Length: 234
Image 1 (cartoon, rainbow, N blue to C red):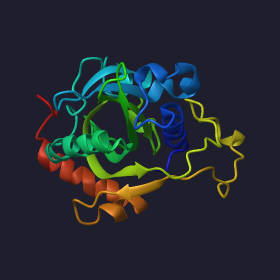
Image 2 (image 1 turned 135 degrees about the horizontal axis):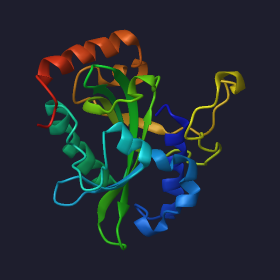
Image 3 (image 1 turned 135 degrees about the vertical axis):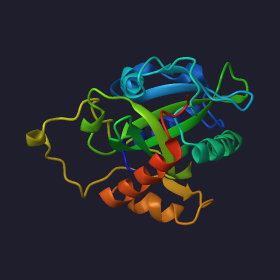
Image 4 (image 1 turned 45 degrees about the horizontal axis):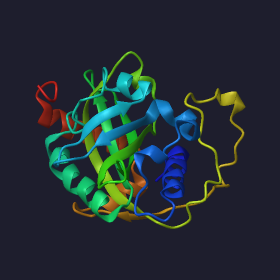
């Protein structure tokens, strides 16, 4: 994982499970995730389907409307929709957060890199059948201003294994501060989590570690455009 907010979210998830395989939805205190709420969502994961139950305002704007009741897999490309259910079921079975790196594109082919974490949860102390999720744009968000994403492609994935979950850093504010106010040292970091990378496709680990350059985005966009033929999901 790269984004500090996602590290914080996984640390919080581990804290509230209190030695159990997974926390219950009732254990989540929205106040603890206050600054993350625009990027937080809740998925129902029963019967091999993944449906939004709740989603933050920024996510709804990002995907063009209210997400409640919509299929999580809807905007993903064909290959991603094939791979994601197995990855998500594995995360539920092992009670481990799932890390996803993806590229999202708009109708006019603007693109952003996204990092998502999906954390298994129970509901009313039952089976693990829900995910608490956080999705963060990793690149410049200006391509999404006045636009929504209609296509998303999975680049890399991995299960986050337990390491040091101490929440040493508070989450970042929902809106990035002006450049003139950024004075943090990039050398200092808080706790780290061990990432076990899925290598179902050649080069997945390398993509996970190095992805983010314009060349990689361009290649992926060309693949996306070749597969789309129009608005995805119609």
